[in-house]
Length: 402
Image (cartoon, rainbow, N blue to C red):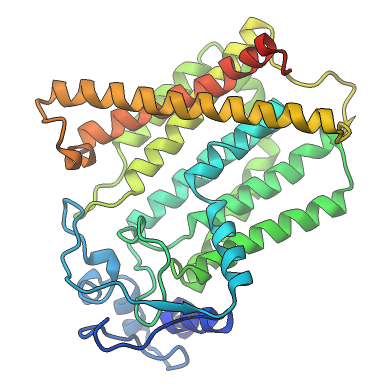
C-alpha cells in the first residue's frame, strides 16, 4: 500500500500526464540549478520513505514551492519560474477553462446565475454543499500538510496557490459536490433526462479533476482523495438534506447559527508557520455561505422566495431569443451588483480595520494578519451572499427583468 500511495503522489506521474497532453518544461540549466527531482514513479518505496515524502516538511523545504514562502508571503528562493512549451493548444485551453471552474470568478457568477435564472432552491442546495466540502477540504490540507508536486519536473501554471498544501484537491471536491448535488436535487424540481444530466456531471467533474494534474497543482493522489472525500460527504449527508432545508428556512435561530458558526470556524482555522491563501479563501467561502443562508431565511419571512410555481417537476423554459436576452441581462446586472458590493464592502472594511489597528493604508501585507484578514473577508462575502439572495431578484422586478 505504501508503494502505491508513493506512486500516486509522485511528481513524475503528473509530469508524464502533462507531457502526454503536450505540456512540458523547456530544458534550461538556468531555470533550476539547485532543483532536486524526486525518485522515478516506478521506484519501490518503503513505508518509512513514504512517510518522509508525504509528511516531513523539513525534507521538502528546499524542493517544493510550498516552502519558498516566509510568513509575509514573499518568495525566499531566487530561482526563476521554469519556462514551458505547449504542443496541444486545444487541450491547453480546455484544461485552463476547466481549472477556472474552481476559482472565485466561477462561484461568484455561476452559482448566483442558478438562483437568478433557474431555481433558488437548487442554488441553496449547491451553496450549502459547496460551503461544507470546501471547508473540510481546506482544513484537511493544513492539517495533513502534504506537499504539492515538485517543479521541476512538473510545469506549474498557477502561482496564487503555490504556498498551499496539496491533499486533498478542493477543486475536485467542489466539482464532485456541485455536479452531483445538482444532479440529485434537480429531478424533484425540473424535468430533464437523468442520463443526460449524469453524463454532464461526470464530464464536467472529470475535466476539473484532470485540469488539476494538467496545471501541475495536484498529484494523482490529491485528486483521488478529493473525489472520494466529496463522494463520501454526499452519501452521508444526502438523507438529511430535506431536514436541513426545513431548519435553514423556518427556524428562528437559523440566521444566528449560520453567522456565529461560520465566524467561529473562520477564526479557529488552523495556523501555519508560513502564509498561504487557504485561511482567507476558507473565510470567503464561509462568509458567502452564511450570507446566502441568512438571505434565504429572510426571503421566507418576507413571503417572497422567487422559486418557480409548481406543480413540480416543471418543464425547462424554452430557450427563445427573448428568454436568452433576459437571462443575459439578469446575469450582467446581477454580476455587476455583486462585484460592486464586493469592492465597496472590502474597501470600507479594510479602511475601518486598518484604522482600528493603526496600520498604514499602504501596508498591503497587513491584510494577511488574522485579526484583519478574517473580519474583512467575512464581512465582504457575507454582504455578497445577502445581496445575491435578497436584493438582486428584487432589483430584477424593479427593472422588469423577472
